[in-house]
Image (tube, rainbow, N blue to C red; front, side, top):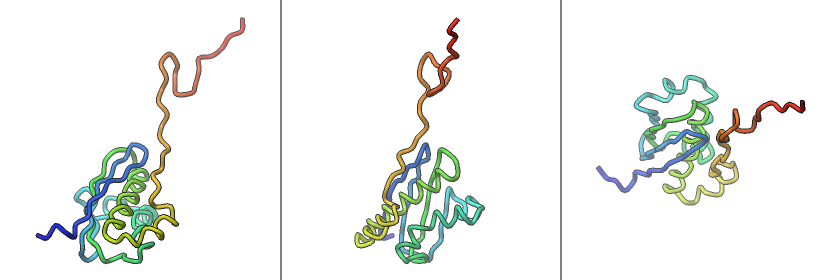
Length: 131
């Protein structure tokens, strides 16, 4: 098999990590060994996942193999979006301005804040008693 037209990339959001392989094909999307419709049953999640392909105007040009873990479904979709955008740029660097304009190349930095020692939560403090 010719490895020159397989593009690999990684995306992250919150605690989710997505590893993606993009290769020329007919538009088949596989997530963790399952078809896209089985792994992400809602149409909204499917549309968000495929947004980079819509922006690039290449919805059926590539076969996509995705491995993802951690977090929830929405976090995984965000990680896949970033990975797919990065892989599309590897395939065609001229897509960068269009993807950047849509905000698909920005890694969402929001994460859960860690719990601090000696306190019940990240920001919560024990009850203060004046007397």
